Length: 224
Image 1 (cartoon, rainbow, N blue to C red):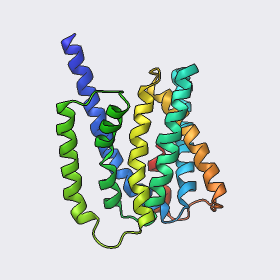
Image 2 (image 1 turned 30 degrees about the horizontal axis):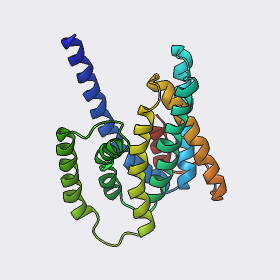
Image 3 (image 1 turned 30 degrees about the vertical axis):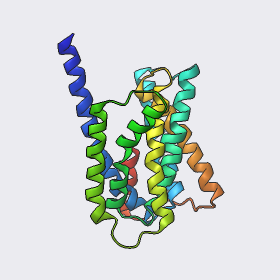
Image 4 (image 1 turned 90 degrees about the horizontal axis):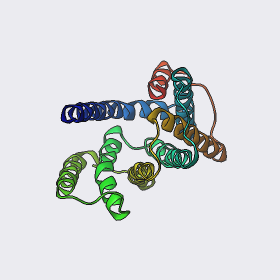
């Protein structure tokens, strides 16, 4: 049992490392797409394509979609984690640099820790406090250089709120029955893409195909 647990932990940490690497590259790709595409439209198209990929995997693997409370949880997770959070982050990256946005997004772990404790989802531990303090120190050090110069407040505010919404989305997911992660993300991304598309239409954004090869490459990377 101990060996099995160690294997699970190793896979978990490897997956987390992959998230860090891919997440860092994503900021660069998003910045590339918002140079040409309207932000809400760009985010909506990204998650719509990604949702199609996930649903295709579900069909091939014959994985069932969540039902009942699990379906509700996946939908709320998508509304927050893909809809609201990425609407804010795509808007912020219209003006903010990739460095500033990524530094602010680094607050997600400490925000998750604090929100989980406030909502009594997980207890606040000494180990968690130590990790949170390290996170804050890292943000402070990086922000000393990244936040220099004039930063439009509305874009900075969007980048500050986005990590809070992402942190809350992970806590919401914990409150509902656990489901297959591919199924959860398929539902979540479909819901998030739908909300982003509606917001894009309400904002009267132009829906056009990319013209630059770099935009196509960035959009393909983000969708996959």
